[in-house]
Length: 447
Ligand SMILES: O=C(O)C1=C[C@@H](OP(=O)(O)O)[C@@H](O)[C@H](O)C1
Ligand SMILES: C=C(OP(=O)(O)O)C(=O)O
Picture: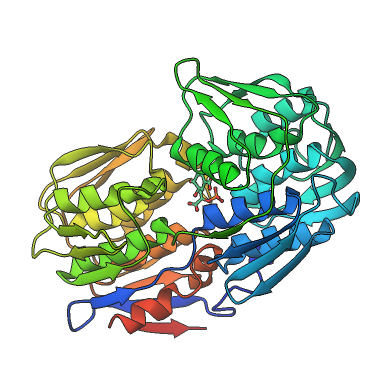
């Protein structure tokens, strides 16, 4: 059952239980403007809230994940105005105006993992709660590190999990050990808060950090607000000097994870999609890797100097390869949805940690592809999908926006695809189905 409490006032399709997607009569052919990156939006909002001065963040994402970030910051006493897709944030210099409060993070991993460290750097006591799924997602390694750094933690249900009461006593700084094998968000959260520690901090990462590009996005955002964190890949450490963020005006890149669905639509329908505002050779967003895979599948991709990306689809998608999703695992589901239409099997691996995302994504996508009579093999860290003709089916989406958006792609090529709980897309892309309709797909909602 979806946790509807996590659907914010910015969510859509309330009371709609199913949506049937039918293939467009014509090939998609459109220019798409995608909203700001969810990951960049929540980084910029939290850092701006900690900064000295008033920041202007242009191109924010208006979705559930951003909404709960904004609401949490307002609950902390931050003066935060939203004008269209611009946020004006009056920073507190690391001293949260409201030293007590109830913070709800929804289903947003970025808020759930970034806020605790930012609070621990301050003084106060707050109760943090989240969606049902958030209480099942890993956060122990981060909370252990914060405890070592001086935070007080009282768990209200399961140990080392949401919900909990956090007492901020300031961060000690110095050496911190942290693992990144379950999520890159733990180190991102600690990095964001580290400048406000009582002394410079050195984070010693233990082993491999998944989706490490997101940590680079964090470091870049910190730099935009005036703090330079140093990364030593050899020693697997991050060193953060003491300091404060300075307010700035920043324009956020579009969300490339969302762009991937539209690029996939061109691939699947032998159509054409142009997105703008993305400099493919400069972005840190790891899902940009999708473009190379679309080329490998036979599409033509143009990476414009002007920030335009064009994807031209092909009559027959090519398969017969294996992909490591370690760097860009959010697109595992998108690739899996396209794979039945390739001419040979596609294997995705190195994505075990997505079993801890909005749902156990490997198990979920295998289950739903089998409902479509697609042959699929589940592996501990991924899956192999074989070519096939999806049969009509009613598909579950597990309260997971990426399950809903990926499975909907199948409806652009196969008849009879209906998915449950379309509103779950509100986590990062509330206008997804209206966009699909604009592109010519048949979209029929059922209460
Ligand atoms: O830091 C971020 O903005 C994100 C990090 C990744 O999570 P994990 O590192 O937990 O896989 C990614 O899947 C998520 O969509 C956004
Ligand atoms: C895993 C995701 O989000 P988060 O971890 O930020 O909730 C996602 O958007 O696919």
